[in-house]
Length: 285
Image 1 (cartoon, one colour):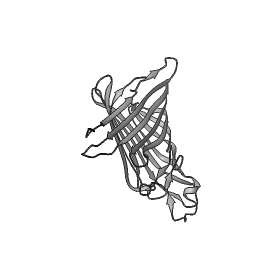
Image 2 (cartoon, helix red, strand yellow):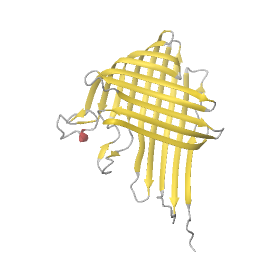
Image 3 (tube, one colour):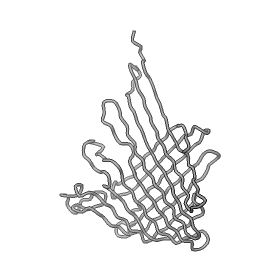
Image 4 (cartoon, one colour):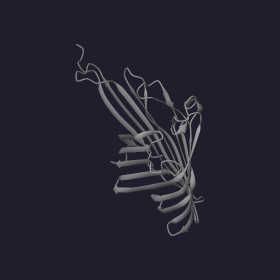
């Protein structure tokens, strides 16, 4: 007799390479990184309560390489994330996709203050599709691509607590011509007007970073980016906030929670949000 329930499996596995700081006594560079692999899978057969077979996976890399020499500081952070989900009977869908690079150069001025210059780059790896049709492509690699750069002042207490203020920041938005060709100049894609492939903005940026331990084995990382365009609707401040929490259970197990919210009225008139949580096994390398 065929069993009413043959398989019911729920698996959530994450691999976290915990932050390991590599210090070379002959160099002024400090390097540390976290690699995360999160997989979730559920399968059902004759399960009367219902359910759909599905699989989801996320990969995330968060890598820092910083330089210190006398009065000079140069902090660099690279972030890459990609995720997919597959539900039986449906097409595979993307759940996360981003590439981001931040570079911040500082020359000591006085106390915790530094003269600074920063550079930020953001894009995605894969094509994005309209959530209603799932067939109309609305984005892909380097479309859009965001660049920000400018001089400013950096307040830096430590590598885990710093705020950069850049009142003269240039911002460039790039999209491929096939997204804007044929559109009237009154229409736009990610803020880029019809018939064009770039949009230039000039404004003020504030970038903050704060990482701390709530208690032993529980760390909280906050990354905040604000931008106001002097040239158009300065009151509409772009916001990008990321929260990453790692709760270490023991040497091998931890829970990881990530939350991000974005407000950019050139791309979408509302808040974009994402969140990921996983219980996993830790491996150092």
